[in-house]
Image (cartoon, chains in turn green, brown):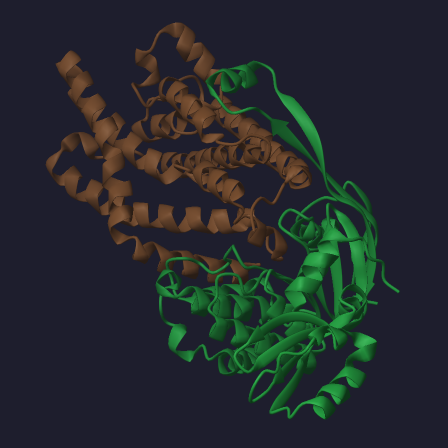
Length: 326
Length: 256
């Protein structure tokens, strides 16, 4: 077991104040606080080497949970064990075997080249020279960092910086990696590169990875298992495919025809749209094989394509409904 | 530990050279206020010009070698959330701050010492009449002074876990300390009440006390001065530890 979380809770005291001059002045003398329950009662376990996607809309409690797992935040209640350590105890051994990447923050030293940050990390994580050289070589090759190492961090593009950021966090070869929106703001090509890297790294090093992202692409490419959180509560924890089948019990069938005949499509499935030479139907999962066969039989089909509904749709539904893992 | 410091020092050194111009401004810009104050005093009491020259020249050196800017850095890092990366790494933030202080102060010294030596050729008032023992006491007081100022600034910065923009309060205390630390005038020129107060407050031990030792005009006995200086250093050390422990629990790790 790599990560073990039980009944985790985090409350924040937030100062409430209405907009405007008078209220601003009033708040000088009398402050009102409100308790925000960012994480209400979460329990889960993650095995060593697993990649788990942590999904939820903005303000759902994902980042708060990750920060508690990394020892940044002190939990209001509940237990966390990461590789046997209680994160908030801030033990050096704990810090040496985990890493945190926050897509919107940088650990690279801003005005000097990334290599300087790497050297600093080598010292503070007490990485041996040979191990450091070996890991650095591997990371430089995988992430194509060579041309970036000597440039001041501030002059790197967002994508280049994120690649260096990943390298900086992996130099000490952590067993557990928390990735909080690692692909935020990156272009599609760089997102893909970063994903491939994470997948490969996980395979080769058996690193436990907990990933949050707003991009479904990250999650579908990397994670078999997802945890969905909203309003500080875990709504779903389980297989991504099963979730999809549960929430969207249909598939999309796209038929290409030389000429679209005017027939009643409703007997095949729910009509989504008719385009020039193309008909899209929504069909219940259990009827897909049957309907496909009938379509092929009834028409001279040029092409037939069966698709799962887009993952975005699944997740949007999941945020709305309360689904429980089977 | 030493190796980690060596690496941090080297990194801070490289970083500083990225800010060449700013570093020079920090050395020479900080001279303006003491120089103007010196000219005002020299104008008030022409007879004592030599005393003022030595006092304010010492003040400039001591002020630069003890100055601490950590409250500004911490305030920003905590408010913007970049502090988080120091918490997750296995080497406490305070070490990074100490390394930075050491590098900048070394550079200030390397620039200011030759300037003093050259100036002493032309200005007799700057020729020090200290024996080795007195010089050693000065260096000791200087080290304590920079520790007090550092810990004062750092512990204030840690208040950033509770209060946003602690720098405003810090700025006010800095202004008050101008009097008590001896930066406006030698303590012996100030009203007796302020002299009395400054003897017990920490500010004199941040700047004024080492200056007095360097100029050979110590207010009270040097022994008492050292006792109080060490007392304040330990107080701020304890305060820094306490605030660090409590602050981490309070930390909201904002952003991201």
